[in-house]
Length: 280
Image 1 (cartoon, rainbow, N blue to C red):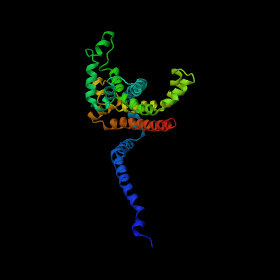
Image 2: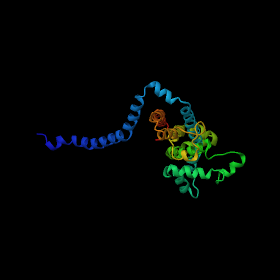
Image 3: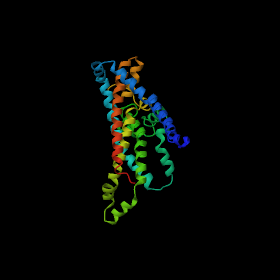
Image 4: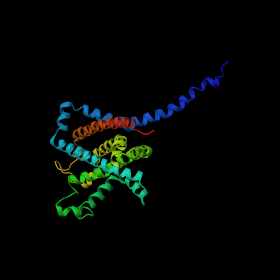
């Protein structure tokens, strides 16, 4: 006769697994799915014609252009310098390395409004850095250049922190083998190292780009927020809400949500692609 206790044992692990599963799904639904679904449902009530009219207003198109263009350029530039910073932090030892490594996370820890205030002060015409550009007629704070600097600031950690684990897992024996076969340092980088780290670089750039698209706190301080000049989409949403134009805010928010979803798909694709090159 079978032992009743043994017959119940297979169901016990299922109960243990089901509780975290329910908590995980419930948390994600309440925190992420429901707000996105509410925004989507609100936009559907407008009708396609009205949605398209509001989404393609000249001020909206200008805000999209400033937002996406500056975010993309900031992500690409951070992709270059973030790769260099990650390489130095992983491959070199120098005094103050831990301090430099901690500074990379500063945009994560610093409140965005404080970051905007600091950047606006530093890059003003009389600021520590802005004073060197002012004699050449280059104004940074309260211009589109200020928006660009703020996006550079917030996007950098995503590239560095995405690339560091990949560089740490790379086997130096492969580089040494290529060197022993007569390959130059330039050839080793382009043919051995770069194909391995390229998926991580692109993932970091995509993450930085997606983060910069939704930035508000620092940009609203360092820019003048003038339409057709340096007004970005997140700030335009806030302006619409201040004017009680909930339709305009909903439409612009939906556009940013759709772009974010596309970026999410791209990031997941890049991460899966990167698994092919990850060193075991």
